[in-house]
Amino acid sequence: MGHLPEREVCHMRRHIDFDKIGITDDVMFCTVLSNSEDCREFLQRILGIEIEEIVVVGTQVSMKSNFHAKGVRLDVYAKDKKGNAYDIEMQTTKMRELPLRSRYYHSEMDSYQIAEGEKYGNLKHSIVIFVCNFDLFAKNRSVYTFESICREDTEIHLQDKRKTIFININGSREDVPEELAHLLDYLKTKTPTDGFTERLEQRVLKIRRDTEWRDDYMTLEMKMDEKYEQGREQGLKEGITKGIEQGIEQGIEQGIEQGIEQGIERGIEQGIELGIGQGLRVQIQKKLNKGKSISQIADECEESEDTIRKIISEKGISE
Image (cartoon, rainbow, N blue to C red; front, side, top):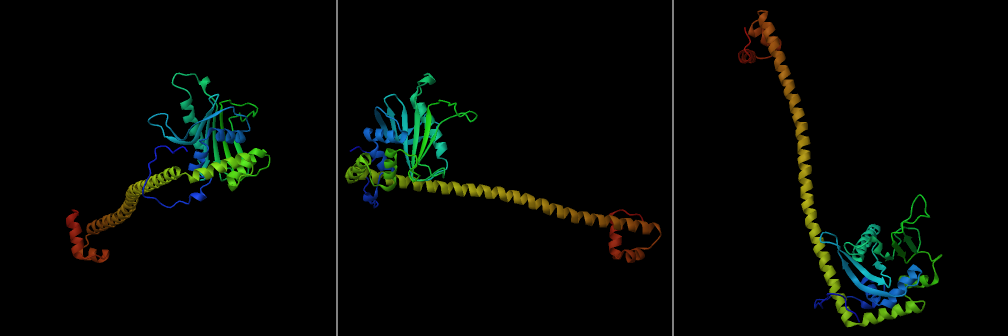
């Protein structure tokens, strides 16, 4: 029985019901298809072609084309005798960016096919397959196959040797070949209905009973839990920091807006006050020119005599 890479048995364990782990469990799926013959038959049924020989390069294979690139982990990475590369992904979580992930998987697989300085003609076929327990495109199809073609003339194929396939195990079996239908039914119900799916189920049962595999599985689950918790904590910290930054920015913006509003209001008030004061001085000057007394001016302007005297004194109005 093959072991999962770089695992160590952990003494602190949480309960896992291994009897309920089936073929669509990511770790189980990778372990079952690590068998080259089973992987070859699996691919043949999905692709509808004969494949002479398959070598499973590895499961949970990490790829990173350069130091700055985002790393990817391929569930089951295999190659045939001609050098064509296959990536089979078990996907049980619906994610809208799966098409973009497929694009990145293709690019990483290509970077591992040819070395620097080699001709592009040396690139082999690159096939990425997502086995999903949901319908990403909501058309009730069991198989969605994508290749590059010309939109203006669909008879023209780009021939870039890339193919992406999305399998929906819950889709309609109409126009689905019988052998593939048996495989999809098994993935959906966990009940084998032909020789190949019976073989896969027997492998599942055997793997479940393997104590070392169980230890590896437990360790992997705990590491995933730790990474999840670390990611959650990091996300929380970044969220708080971002929230504070946005709060400060919004506070500054609101403060500026409020300051402008208050400034306008205050300016209007001061303008009115200045306007009234200027008008009063003009009236006082006119009345003085007519020879009126301070008492008369105060009475007509409805101001105190002291106020009239103060304005005359401060503004240099000549009596």
